[in-house]
Image 1 (cartoon, rainbow, N blue to C red):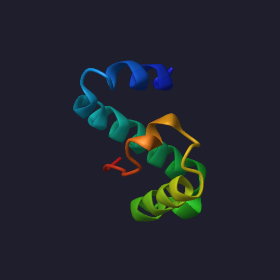
Image 2: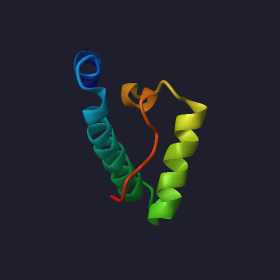
Image 3: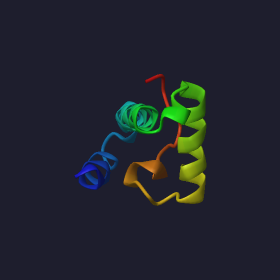
Image 4: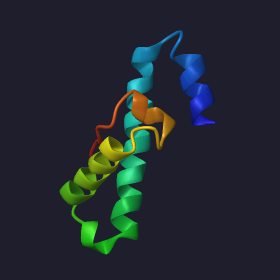
Length: 72
């Protein structure tokens, strides 16, 4: 579903997708923090997500736009 949104809206207003993608990344960081207690600190969770994004850049479709994380 996210792939369809990105493909459609990136043709018309790609700059407006960045907040949406950052929001998805914030949800991923929050999930990482809740799932893995050793990554409960926000910096550790963000670092782990960015490490995964570098290792597997095509894991999530929205990572082709950005892998940064906002405060969750």
